[in-house]
Structures are given as C-alpha cells and as structure tokens.
Length: 202
Ligand code: ADP
Image (tube, rainbow, N blue to C red; front, side, top):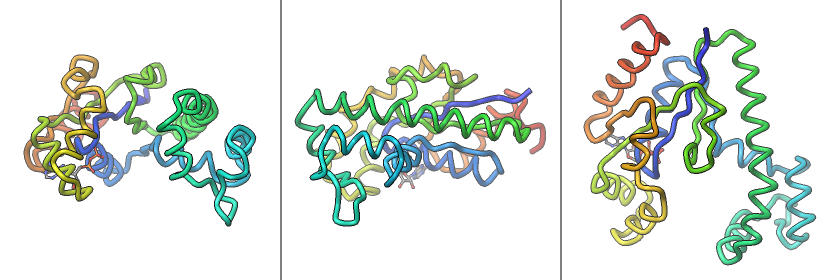
C-alpha cells in the first residue's frame, strides 16, 4: 500500500527543511511552488492564456512572463488575481496529480506533495494524510527576518497575512514541532513515518 502525504506549513516554518530531509531519505517530493513556475514557462498552455488575458505587455524581452509585473497587477486588482488563479491553479493541480501518478506507478511507497496552501485551497482530497511543520510565531519571525533579510515589521506583516499556523494544527494528521534543533525535527519526522508504516528501519 502506498501513501500520498501532503506536507504543509507557513512561511519560514521549516517546510523546505523537512522537504530536504525527505528527499535525502529518498522519497519523491512534488513541490507546488516549483510546478507553479513551470506551468507558466514559454509555450505551456497557461502561459498562452496569461498573455491572452493580460496582454503582451506582461512578457519580458525574452518572451518569458514578467512575474514581478504580474505580481503587482494582481496585488492591486482582486478580479485579475482571480483570473490568474483560475488559469494557474487547475494547471498546477493537474501537473501535481500527473507526477503523483507517475511515482505511484513506479511503486514508490510514499509520495509527498509539498503544498503551502494545502488547507486554505482545500486540496486535502489529493492526499491520504497531512503533515504540518509548526513553529511558534516568535521563532518564525526571527527565522524569517534572518532568511529574507527583513525588518521585524516586514516579517510580522508577512506572517500575519497568512492563516495562523496554530489554526492548522487541528487540521493536520501529524504535526512536527520545529522550534528546536533540526536534529529534533528529523527525529519527529522519523517517528511519524514509522507510525504510518512508511519506514520500518532506524
Ligand atoms: P519554509 O520552507 O517553511 O519557508 P525553511 O525550511 O526555509 O522554511 O526555514 C526557514 C528558515 O529557518 C531557513 O533559513 C532555515 O534554514 C531555518 N530553519 C529551519 N528549521 C530550523 C531549525 N530547526 N533550527 C534553526 N533554523 C531552522
């Protein structure tokens, strides 16, 4: 029996850190952010739809989508944001499902879907189980400031624009507390994988 697991968290909660651990253990991890970038590459269907909807002025000289420009348009215009999501989200879902099916057909025992907005976007139907990487907000702020070179206020603003991690805790099948060392995080990850019969060693 194989298992599809949704990995989620908040900004700077440690999701990439856990995802790297999973990759080094040999598990396939399908990253929603990477796929979202891939589906808007030149020649892809969503790429063409975006130009149809937003006009030629949205592309750079090399014809690639100007993501910064697109970002600032949708930041100021709710309808445009919806329009973009209606183009990109189904394409991302479709590609994630395809990659998941590919790994399952190859006989992988577990496949991880790394989806930052797993709960917010109601994507839990894509997975069998959900795993949340949690940190206390003060640690989250400190790590975000250090990683992205942000001021305290900038870091706080980014965190408070997201669903609080605390309200995701009761939605997840398993929670990794990433307040401590990465070794402690890895130990918790291994314990969860053992409990779910995904690994039997260690
Ligand atoms: P996310 O992918 O959720 O945004 P990251 O995995 O990039 O978060 O972690 C955010 C930052 O915190 C990174 O700079 C990372 O190296 C650091 N970090 C993550 N987990 C720990 C930990 N347990 N101890 C110390 N630093 C950590």
